[in-house]
Length: 248
Image (cartoon, rainbow, N blue to C red; front, side, top):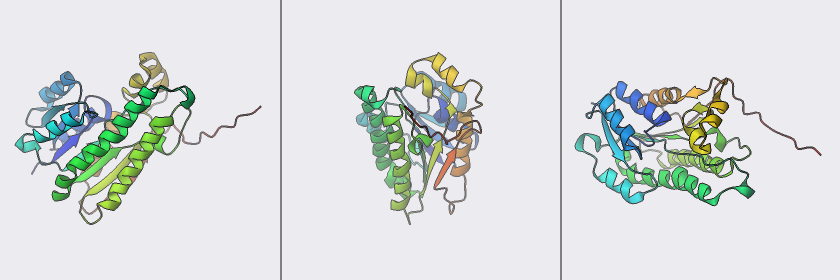
């Protein structure tokens, strides 16, 4: 019997690649996002029997509730929640940062994630499903200008591990995936500059959305008695040894 995944942030990058990977391997997907035209294109490409578009901003709880309540029958039973939606805004040091940017990151990366997870937990427990969250290496290795983004991803990493503890004995599998550099729209959204995005990834052979999607697929299809607690991925070109010393 085909299983159903609920994938947030499915209009680009890791989320979009995840929907494609899951559908190619027999899953149905509820694909969420704000950009209707992109979700409609996924439905046209993969089929309305395989993808249900749920068009809403994850920060809008009322719209989230309506999307969940209106899932059609074949998509109503969720076996896998992929908490992928997230963003970074700004690279200014904390003392110069825009508070609206901070609030947007908290609302998206933290508040929306925990609300959606809590709303879907009863069904996931009933179906002995799985939760896979996209955290970040930024939650473990901070960097200048990372401030609230790094803090929000530290929360995502540890909230996911805490879910694993709370769901002990339920049969629900929980995994925190913590990627490094992945070439998506991430930097374009963060900076508003395609040039900045191109410069960041140029010559670095970064990971792709498909790389992370294939990791999600592998975890999702493991036997039900196996749990990957957390997995950290980086391109070979990236390194976490970034300690700096300021000198007079």
